[in-house]
Length: 313
Image (cartoon, rainbow, N blue to C red; front, side, top):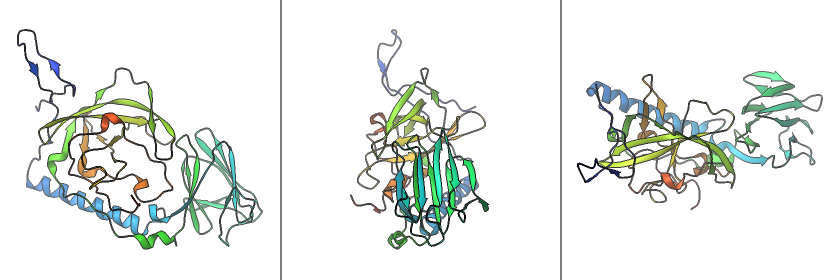
């Protein structure tokens, strides 16, 4: 049975009899069983990257399809339609002058058609009224995200967005299996609510769930793992928002994210090859968490997504 040694990222005192300081350590890279497993992993990374590029290039809710954002701010409801007095005016001939009213109700949204001819689509079903969780609805030729994050907003997507013309692909580091770890999550004994700032200036609530202690290219690294306290975030999921020595150079200036996967045995797959840029690396219409100072790594993580420079620096 493989033994994982998980220690704090700070130096720990040795036993009095030893008298010396012991260097902290962490879980090393996951072992690859054979060449077939390595080939399967390489194929999975390739497919994931191709799918990500395809989604950005032509997806109905691609970041490049986003053409507008309207925040609720201190309002509980927004009216959407073609009329000049709408809170969110959309120039789509299929929409009624006053098409919808969208109201924030706790963690959900109440969506109501207003004018007699108005309706909206949810998963192919035409509706005039529904209580919906955060997600996508269709209005005319457009899609609209009901975004919550405790700072509700409506994000509009246009299949004919002019931003698609800016598409020039994405960039990644070559896959390096030394950046792939299977590690335990050291739980936070006092998981109180903490604050994670975001790119639109919002203070977003989260729980510091615990820490991953890794040995990355021979260097001990401790990563904070957070769970955002927002609608749609699973109670058993965690996210890692981090910066490293490549941030602002080869990689996006805000930082990068990872979504560790919990395994059946209770450990987690923490794979920097799947490190990705936040949506705000491509579009200004998003609200993205900013990594904490604790997750600003001094080493370079030469894995995962690079900055493809969709946003001006």
